[in-house]
Amino acid sequence: MKIPFIPYGHQWLANDDIKAVVAVLKGDWLTQGPLIDEFEKAVVKYCRAKYAVAVSSGTAALHAAFAAAGIGKGDEVITTPLTFAATANAVVYCQGTPVFADIDPRTLNIDPKEIEKKLTKKTKAIAPVDFRGYPAELNEILRIAKKHKLLVIEDASHAIGSEYRGKKIGSIADMTIFSFHPVKTITTGEGGMVLTNNREFYERMRVFRHHGVVKKPSKGAWYYEIENPGYNYRITDLQCALGLSQMKKFGKFIKGREEIVREYNRAFSKMPEVILPLEKPYAKSVYHLYVIELELSRLKAGRRQIFEDLKEQGIGVQVHYMPLHLHPFYKKKFGYKKGDFPVAEHYYERALTLPLFPKMTVKEVHTVIQTVKSIVSKYRV
Ligand SMILES: *Cc1c(COP(=O)(O)O)cnc(C)c1O
Image (cartoon, rainbow, N blue to C red):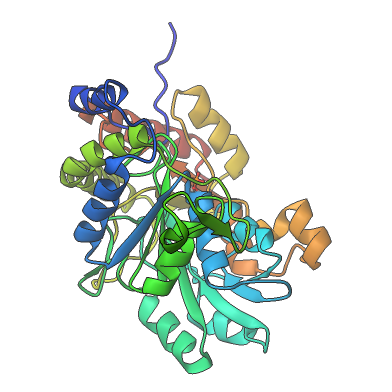
């Protein structure tokens, strides 16, 4: 018998999403039509921010934000090693230098005390990541940024919908990045967005996503100039139709995630072989990922064995993430080495991401719990 496979994340599309996209296909605009503005407005309203620029991916959003911030050759951007490669890669696109600062072992987000140790004259920005959807320690980070005149560019690819001290993520940092890849909490297929309250950043990013085209209507309706070459980072109306339709159901998606997390927490908090990350009362996570740490001293098997056993049983576990400083490019180019960020490395060696997506059935949730329990008990010392 083939064991059904439960992936670690999955989009939730329904007939209304399909109808919304088909309506665009039947209309006049496939791209650069009215739905881009509409989608931006919907997200801005939801996050209580001022401006948004929707682009073709979360990575393009990061690139646009770092470019708008003026990151250039030799400029340093402090970020966490525990993130997807795009966070640091986008700094490299701008010829900047990503400078990693270790994480807090309890929240798994960048540790403000470690940020302070990494400040130099070349530091231009701090780029915290809201890992798993759980907000980074933004008050502390903003305080450091203010003191040293730095920008805060928040990679909230996991965290649209999360809240920090009563404010929605998206309205707090100088610029905030969202991703709408299908594993994220709402999707446009591919897609991303930058939110900001700064008019100048907003205008720069609109030009950046469309080749660097600056229109000069006083010289004719056709007339434009390129002052700096931009990129084609446009999002399409097709994608924005999907995004708008997903936004309408976002509350339901979040509730679904919360219910599964409650079930998981109830089961796993009783297991001494499993460590759950800490949540503070003033931060509300949208739960993009459900991550656990294995207490390896209580187990006869390593993470790899347990990962493979779970996969074999149909549980689509993942590992988020191998710390970025361990990738060959970051080692070679910036001289990082194993041992540089012991907290992130310690986490990585024990980390597992379990399936979490709102369309999961109660039965699937229980299958995950039972399978983890039985594999852990098999290896218990
Ligand atoms: C998904 C993700 C990105 C990149 O988003 P894409 O839309 O896939 O380009 C960037 N940073 C983090 C932390 C992510 O999880």
